[in-house]
Image 1 (cartoon, chains in turn yellow, cyan):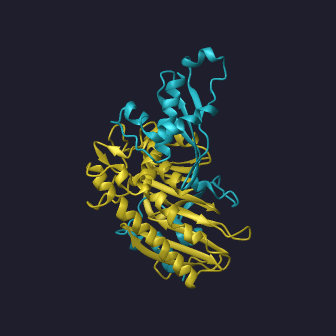
Image 2 (spheres, chains in turn orange, green):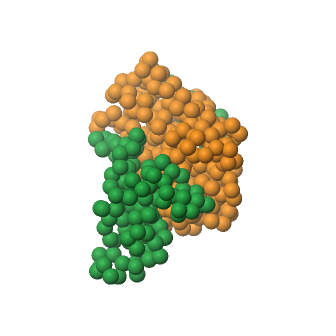
Image 3 (spheres, one colour):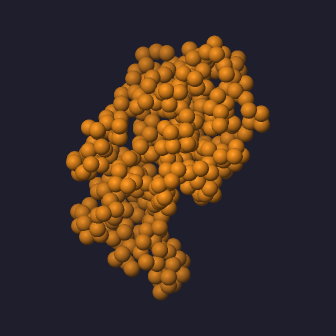
Length: 258
Length: 153
């Protein structure tokens, strides 16, 4: 393992400014290259992104008893009493449930938990002020799910390492991304958080699923749904339009999905 | 059959357009009575049968219906639903979604992960960011991502 002094930026890589904050129990990491990396515009956009994530947490957190979603789940509120974003997220969850043949469901055993939709959706929204920075390449990660943006054809790719689920100090693959998103779901994710909604069981055939797609909302949903589908993960992911990815099976084998 | 598809489409439209929430306990009547669902039922004018056969065999196979593009406050939304012979929704495809409004950019969702033959660390693999399922605040200080975040300023 590298110490903090390890310098990963080789001379061939462009200079990158980095920011880190913790929101919703997750590290939020930002990398910027280009025109606005360390000026007032960059810091303002970063503050806006963090504020957007904190707003989402107030509305959607299942860890906060007073969030709209917690109160909706307990039947204390109707959907019309909630901000319109709640309806948007639940509608996405309903589409995901149908498309994953029920493996993905924001409702399980009477509990409402849309966090499988919220994270990617929230980061996609939070990235908007950063994408608006002129002449600037952006990579924004929330707990290992990330969006990438490049300013133009001359920008270098963002090189995204895919963590080895059996040894998180290592990566098993690298994917070059220009404008797009990468999401990974796995068992280690909040301690067996992902369950197959059809059976209630925790999938054990897969160590992790990574999905590369245009936007993080659907990359994140599909990574979670594929993980919940267990042995059918790679097969199902191949039926999904404009997705690529990587399945790391429990026995350590890796399978590319293209 | 037509009426069933009509109702299904209005249900899905209501769901996707966020004016209503389709729960597992809400009955057909409740959804159909939603004013938004009713107003959106006109989208069936663009309905096309996915079977491609004669109209007579429609009940024996699945039907795909494409809705019109609806403008929402988040941007245009268009859905396509597929039903089986009994009228049950078997699939919903969101053909157009507000966040897909970046056509002018070079989207490269087809980017393929390159497997690394020997397991390498972040330094030798020259990576910018880590995608993984173990990235939590608790484990962050020991993570590869943490090393990356501290490596450059």
